[in-house]
Length: 181
Image (cartoon, rainbow, N blue to C red; front, side, top):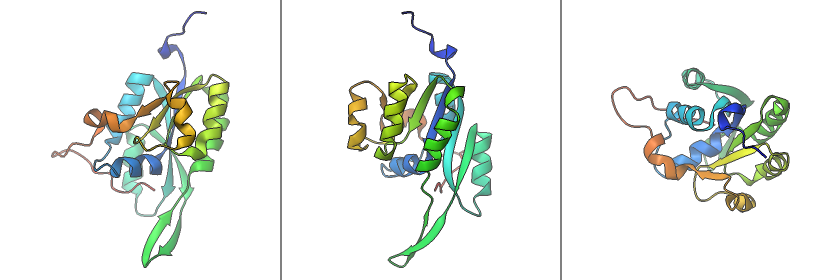
């Protein structure tokens, strides 16, 4: 069977923004979202990168920046709740990511799932069984044990190992992306 060159595939990325952002931040660095989108485009020929994100009033400039960087934003309404005297904003995007990957299923040949969350195990397993899984991008080495079996099959890319090329550099023209929910 002849191998199809990667650039002949239609590749979509489905990105859990909170899992990605919190995973990267837990290691003491910030992701350069523009560089990450360019990396997905150049290395894996990603034509559409869906970014699932909680919608928080006041973050419009962040959302504009992400859209200008090439992401297609799918918003989840957020809820505020008090936890130990602090207001926490919660916007779990798992259902939206799974739903949109199935809505778009016939439009792509391969999918990249960006999350280390085990809640996506059944989606990832299904995509693999249908030969539509390209890669799983885990923010850290501490991804869910439910995803470990995919590591032995060379599906998992750890973003912590790409820090040098994807880290936001502090210089006069860098743009800080503080809040992703």
